Image (cartoon, rainbow, N blue to C red; front, side, top):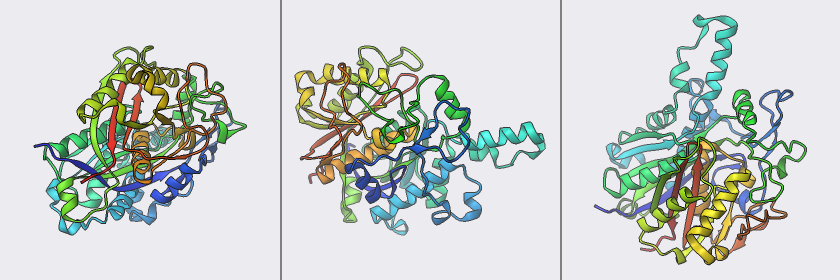
Length: 413
């Protein structure tokens, strides 16, 4: 069986807006969601900025008692999934729940709960640890909580491949639907890791921007003055359906998923291959999986983290794969606005890619004042452009050498 797979619903909890409309309006208008951290005291931290979700009320989506038994990353996932179901206009009473599943990505899971409970252990002893500590903290629990909330009894999985987690989850969901193992899958990712220990850990790696005096200008992918990524949080959830299932219920369709590529650098725990070949192969596999032509790619939503090595080597990968045509492709990094949502990045970036196709608008890379000499492609600097997008690639590259790419296409019957 080789089912066609389409995106019929979108749910976003992001630093630039909650819900599809607020998220997309911010992206196409180049609005940054980065500011000084408000959740904890950053006095002793070299980095004091992040892309926080400041207007999220879990009790709008989840019973208060249940919400208190979830880490923030699970709250994000459940809320975004409910928003996506509403957007898809699915009637959950009319579907086969055994063919309705959840495949999500998260890079870190419930680190806020882990940190809080560890502090309680040190200060008050083991008897004061919450009985909900483990089920709040473990990384698979967001997918479990979404399934419980929506009665999704089909396949249920969690993909953990660092910053490639969401894109791998969407790719795996695509393949599962393609082969006929389900009718509907909730997929994407969630992350809530803006915590003291996570911030300190990434800072110790020298991975984060320290442009504390200019938060909104701190994430600057491909710019010569970039100095690291900015942490973000949130969830990007998509409703994926087989085309037959979507057509039978008269669903609106954002885009079709047509290809998926997954590779590993097998090189270094944090640094990509210097020739970009792992990322290049992931893109090439996705294109070949779709039986598409490289000449048809109109847009690439780059991983584009605003770190020196990622931006340089991803640029090399694109140039190596596309040759001279690389200079004609519109490329942008929406992380310039949302920050880096780590394991959830691929979820919101797949959504940005689907909306670029649906709306024929490519969001910009903001803060791109002067491109690095080694980053010399068209990164759609500072202003969105209106243009037809037939095919869009979305790249995600993670620590451990994980590379994942999905290929989306404008839907045609």
